Length: 162
Length: 162
DNA sequence: GAAACCACCTTGAGTTTGCAACCGGTTGGA
DNA sequence: TCCAACCGGTTGCAAACTCAAGGTGGTTTC
Image (cartoon, rainbow over all chains, first blue to last red; front, side, top):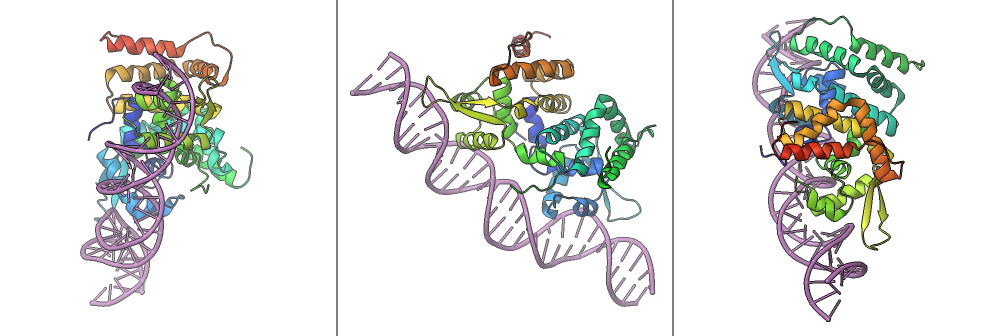
């Protein structure tokens, strides 16, 4: 694949500079969906199946996802994050923080971005360890950032102030 | 404009989730190009003029750039960053950091990403103050991050180790 | 008065997107 | 043994977008 330039920002954009790739990664990262059907059904933006199929293949080709069969279900395919996509956590946090500040998201979806921003590098590291446990068979971490995000989201959905 | 969802990451993607918008912002932010011609000529990825025209208009419409005529040259247009696009500095730093780590950029272009990552929030804040001075008539800051990046880039281009 | 420069537009071919319907194979329950 | 539900996708199609090349009308400089 010919690169437009060797600039790091450009290389990042060439990898997932479109309107869907990061959405798919977000769903796998925060939404716990790991299969084609789960991603298709769980996506709130309403991704089309052909676009999802294309992006999953592309992300696997770029090394941001790995693809393995489920031993129990011969036709089920499970997608996992890789070290490269887990490395996107800080960038996701910053993107969420920007959207939170300048684009007025819905409150219950914005709370996760706020927690992720406020937590800073320490929380990102804990979350990345958790993702390594879930996707790369890393050791089980003491802290569950996923649980904290989930709890805050549910509280917010009930209309509480966090 | 109908939003696909209220998720902050999605809203961010809807604003500049394509292969060129951030490239244009990068050139204005780090490359000091402020006019159509300068952006067209200075862009190392070879952006086409119609794409540049489209993205400039779109970025202005989204509030990421402002557009003003040059009093000295009636037909010259000068584009400036806004508070919202200056707020992208941390995200740009993170994107550069990811590209640096996982995409092996060219050394002379990678050095800026490394400096920006290593500098952390303190350096980002200094850079943002400098951009406010250059684009929003803010007070002149004591530190010139732009100069530091430039110096490092030139040293790297000469083959020195930084 | 001519040449260079200015922001941007037009054209036309090729690519990508989004939607809806569909596919053959697998699984779990009756 | 049958069947409905589920599995990861694929196909056809129209609309939208992308791109390079070349051009536009006007302004500034020499």
